[in-house]
Length: 114
Image (tube, rainbow, N blue to C red; front, side):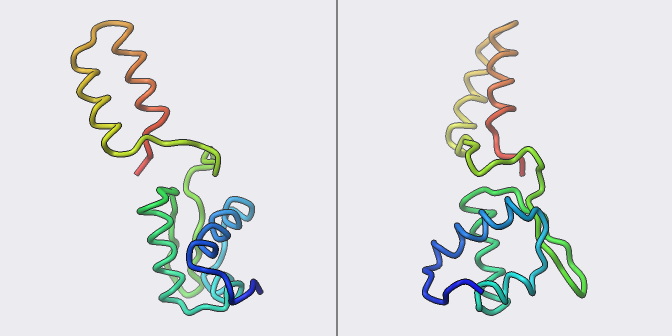
């Protein structure tokens, strides 16, 4: 069990690190590890997915679990934010040929996979 003294930000970071190591974790394991309620874990996972943009898959069921959805995802990987994505999409429309292909590949490589 992790200390109850963690702030929400510290707990969320630890959850991301833990998921990146374990790949799949049961909800009850997270609840016990952080000594918090199920709603707190759900809020943390929502924040991790929506704000930190970590690609998460949630498996429902009696012993539901959570995992990082992309095996290529890394905590060190950088992603474009929505404004950057939209700007690059506008720029791509002005390009032709190989320049367009290169910019499209940049967009594909650094766009968060929703």
